Length: 293
Image 1: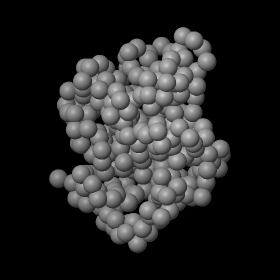
Image 2: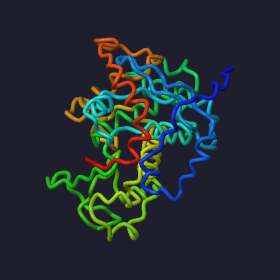
Image 3: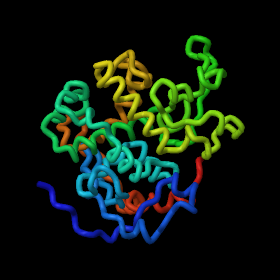
Image 4: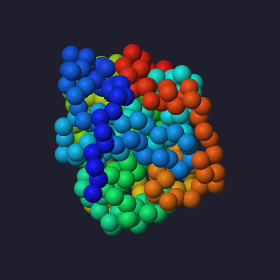
């Protein structure tokens, strides 16, 4: 039985979404929100996230455990970038994770990166999934919420069935407007089509909408289609084994939660200095004033 952690004194973190919509933020309410568990320890990096505020939702705060930072997230903090992963996105993913992705039969699908998945607590399983989506966003979009890519190679440049234009891969998980039809993602092309490329007000670029879409796509691949995480038929090219994109993803998976029992070549080989640790602990509040680089 897990016991809720004691109240923390860490400064509450804000997501970029809340920074873009300050009128929706209630600082007093956020300050009284319960705190998550301290972050999970990673396999490679000697750094963890502090507890973060958890808004009311289907998962109690003491069952939420922020994921470790990916290598690209740490590197961006070392370089002074505000444009990195927000631990509040871990909360968003963990609170909305489909229950099927916690089931014991998911162990085979994720075994390459989490051999102990089947024996983990639900809190540790959620933390693994939060880390995986952070790594996926790192490999797909460099952790940039406003990333926008249009392919010109005829072999991959297809027409989006919603926009009726050459498809663009957009946001943290590089998804498309047609995914609103295919997977029920919360994108509104009619509202977005008059906005400039990369405008953070676009529904497809809002981290919540983009990440929730990713959860639905992942559930479709692993649960509905019974395919493993790594598959040449995956929605994301970064999950196609043997490709350059996959190698980028695998590098970002190096700091998977230690509870997963994954084998890595250099266990906890990199220990960020104290300044980076402090920056990682406070970057959520700092990101409210930052923009895309």
